Image (cartoon, rainbow, N blue to C red; front, side, top):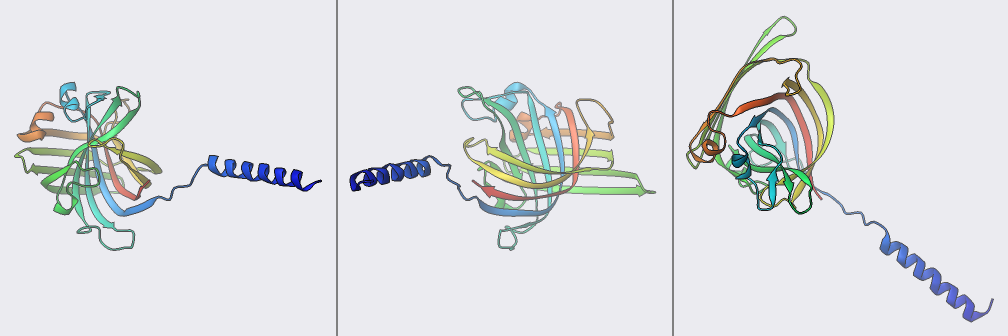
Length: 254
């Protein structure tokens, strides 16, 4: 093989290697931002008016259903990636989310559209939608025998804009289901921004729209004043309720 031919083959091989490297997917390192070591949660899905749900969404997004999800978080311990307390280390948080569809792309996402943090350091939060507010929780469990476990919870949220939310819930605890999860959670302030959640959760479904057992003994959801009163009011219909006695996750930025 002559020198010109060997040189030509070398250039071809180099070009193929360069093209292959250029076309290969590039691994992007994720950045861990926090570890939620332990948290108890109560989640309530409400049927609100379509106008109320729509008022929480950014331009170009439409509520896929007139449902508003409320997640009450009793955070027992949160740490930074290097093991230090995240803000105060403990917190109580209310997160509000709406399932919405993008009018141009047709994609559907669950958007975190609002919320309140008892710890001022949690405002406005990673999703830039949380507000200041006091969140009080009273929980009582009455245990009789092995499985007769009756739980009552009273959540009271007082927002800086004058809004208040009161939730009174009583239920019989069942055996929760433990399952891992990996989720992408998007912001209602900027739907292109998201965080990645990886963890595990023990979930006790107390009431489901698909029927089955209903272990909710009583529940009332009433709001007045401010944004809470405008969106929820005192006539919102409760669609589903779940309780998570254990929740653990690590949070990452892509």
